[in-house]
Length: 602
Image 1 (spheres, one colour):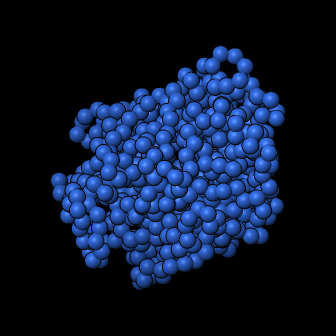
Image 2 (tube, rainbow, N blue to C red):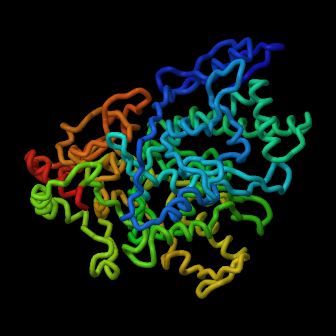
């Protein structure tokens, strides 16, 4: 976005067109009020869904977490930074408000419209921010070594779900969230832009920020704040301009999806070292995966790319904007804001000391969602064993023998499974040039940089290879081998997708790795009978087909499966040769219903 000054009270504002049909409004903005109104129409997010809080919310006791554990998971920092905390709390929503103030961005009914789940105030969440937001303290003010309070996203932002049925909600810890991080990022950027270019809005913002930080409210302090805001906007504009110029993100992700490896790779390989040549098109969005049992899998990610829990979590934190030092004195290289200790503790809470003793998959809630037809489920058990169990190997945490036989994740090649290949192929073919000048594959590059970030933290804190050490608080901690989960930080890029055990599958809609099939029932149909277009963003549950409501609604995301990256092909039960996505014979209506009923019992 570019603002050209034309004199007092007058400006001419232009911006590049976006690939979304409407584009930006382009023209002359003559007053602050008109600038605010025009800026509010920028972007392609359209109207947001209205937020209707449920009448009741159930936390599932059978998931094996206490309320205190849930709150800690929801709001524990992994070391990421969106912006200074005082800015976030002071920011107004990007909507016209002349002559008064707009509501705050953190109002209780606004962030839930972007898919975030409300959360009560607590010691871990003093200002009552939604699940997935954490307050932390790190980061340097420009030109100084001062730290400041910042707000960042936690693991729970993408990995806490909620299903709702007739006014009653069921909280799914470790389940996929409905967050639309793209819309969140766009609206945050627009709110900052409007704050900078509206004198009344900036005056309110500055008063709140300086009051919250305890800095004297002087003209000099306000000017310093304005310069910081300009630097943040300039950095964002540069990043956004490159994304638009190179069409890096041509597939809108919408609610509940993110091209995590693609976008994360762009940040780690191109933004952190400021090397635009490492940017790559990210057009393979995936749904947020469920977390239960994942710490015990041999390989994780939809393409089975990562082996080590610590490497997985550090890569995730870096991908959502932790700060990493990649230049400067040798002793500073690879120092980061990543909260390695928190990441280990989070992983331990998820995993428990043995399979089945950490976070457990959620059982079907019959008193809310309806009773399971046990006779149909028993028939479905046989069909599932015959048709599905060869890939989705059943594994019940806590069952006899489960501790000595952790879950096996079957990898199925692209030709056999036939689902959209973008996510797997993009990662397998991507390369990047490291700051050393070495060109590597994406998997090798992420292995190298995550290993260096992890080892730098270990070195700085004096963590031994094995045994124990004592942290600054006096707590005895395990050594590197234990913190790494007893695994090497190995990465790979197979042209395949994983088939995990399906316990808790009812709570993870929509389906396939890219979220292109709205219900379990449609997963059992030939692909040409699945919905070509449906809407995402509603949490209203369909207990018959097992998925969310897919009907059009105001503010919903229109999911078009004809767009590459969004394909709903593959994983088909269709008569014919078993190849190119056909994995079994066409089923009768009774067989489909029986299998769906059985999957409710997992």
